[in-house]
Image 1 (cartoon, rainbow, N blue to C red):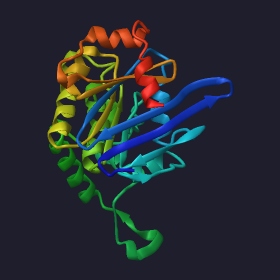
Image 2 (image 1 turned 180 degrees about the vertical axis):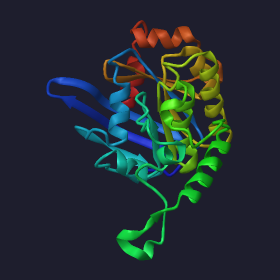
Image 3 (image 1 turned 90 degrees about the horizontal axis):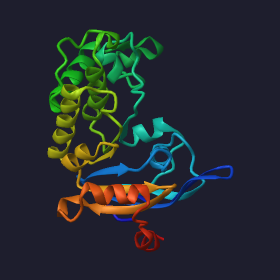
Image 4 (image 1 turned 120 degrees about the vertical axis):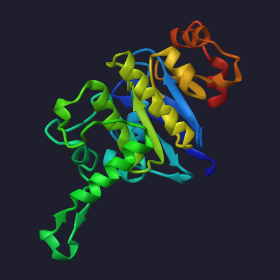
Length: 261
């Protein structure tokens, strides 16, 4: 497949017994592009992301990352390949500080020649953490504070800052502002804009129509486990009402699905 695309899927499908949670998803995403995935609850959005990131194993289909076919055994494989995912649950360790959370599972060590007696390089991890926070314009007053003592917005920003710290090849955010207030939501949206300016591709799962139209280039709509629309919203040809029509089924997207197949 072409290296023009950051991510490409062909016939991506997931069945849970007799339940067809995802069926025949053909998806393409160009370099530097920000794409929103929308749909009602149970439409297949999260299932789609879980197949991409190796959280679950797909029933069938293929996935390419920068033109190379990938088959991730688990989310750690996806992360090592450069896919950073910010799930709603955040997966942060409350009792650890910011650097420890950013480098959890991929700590920087020193004195590696000592074998099992090597030591953690806290200075290097703190410096990399500050660099990553600066790159995304995240402001944390004291990075040595434990995550437990931070606000919901600060916690979300720490999770997102991991993408900058490790120069992700693709960032995926699953409802990043669902539980945040107005000011905290604005901070997260500014981070998304910063990633866009840096040319870093991003997939955003969101129910927030205003947010999506402000932040992304395209909207891909899922309904009943199938992709039913792929809308270039930067063209100005689509409104929120159009998106809602595809989400609810008022517009079926039959022509799009026939073309995708």
